[in-house]
Length: 108
Image (cartoon, rainbow, N blue to C red; front, side, top):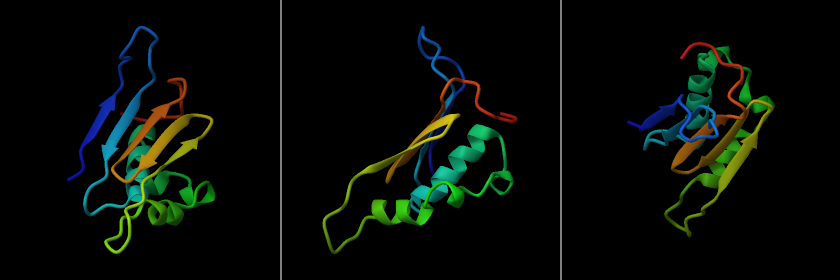
């Protein structure tokens, strides 16, 4: 099972916005972890969110970050920026944060 952490409280004097960190599980792709994190951050079910393929090529993320056994392991990450969120996606984790703490969230 993937590990998650949520920080809704500012962690410094500057008042850092809420953020979520999610470790990509063995049976999970980075794009699936991305959907999980955005759903948790917004308080929406994945089926209630706008389709992410309108904004980012999820298959490309998984392809670029996929490890293979027959060639050198690729390393890298993607940074996605929206008006409300900054998201870092790599092979091992997804970290998302509200840009100013006032992103469109529901619940949680």
